[in-house]
Length: 282
Image (cartoon, rainbow, N blue to C red; front, side, top):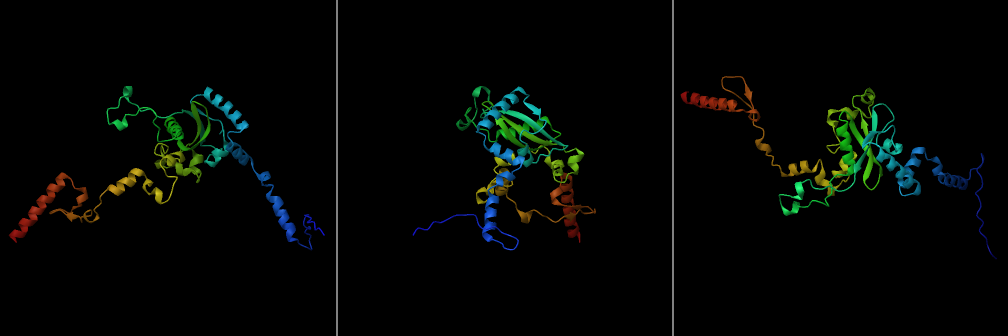
């Protein structure tokens, strides 16, 4: 005979009897409805991941047109991408500011007069040169120079056309009481955080410095390429560095060789000569 396999729903679990198959079935149903549990920011994130969809292409075309009519650098009332801004540290509270800026696209032309390079042939290229940093770091640097009293926290891309790239830069007021009292952001109020965008301390700056990689293939990039090179090429003679301090003759002044000046050296020579003469007379 023929046997037919009938697939049906497992028996239900009751208060007296528990069906393991029914529990598995319930878990499978719950995993299929994870999209129903997404919040608003997750929907925005998924929407911005599909930048070439019809909706995003139409939206970005309208927004880039609007951005071109505005000044090169202007303050935003709110972030254009609230989900991205919040992931990068933005909070809708006092002390946080968002500025939108556009940067002209393209490579870097060598700034020499009339295209003449008075140097080696390898440096005679004028065009087709690429800037070592990204345009996002340029946007952060320009915002930091325009608002020197604010600190650059981070930035993100909001659109581009054939001529410009548009970025939004998150800035923080280090003198605001709300920022200084917030333990999660008051690290940016330290004096060492001044103009961190120029010194490559932002996320975009660390990327062009090569600090996104780790491991044995990235040993010469930390703490920086120049500092690493200097450490490997600098001769340090530890046994001749520390010379014990001595007391000058006729005085109670203790002198170290690391702080010697010309008058002090003369006093040292005179004291040495006086000691030698005293020993001869004795």
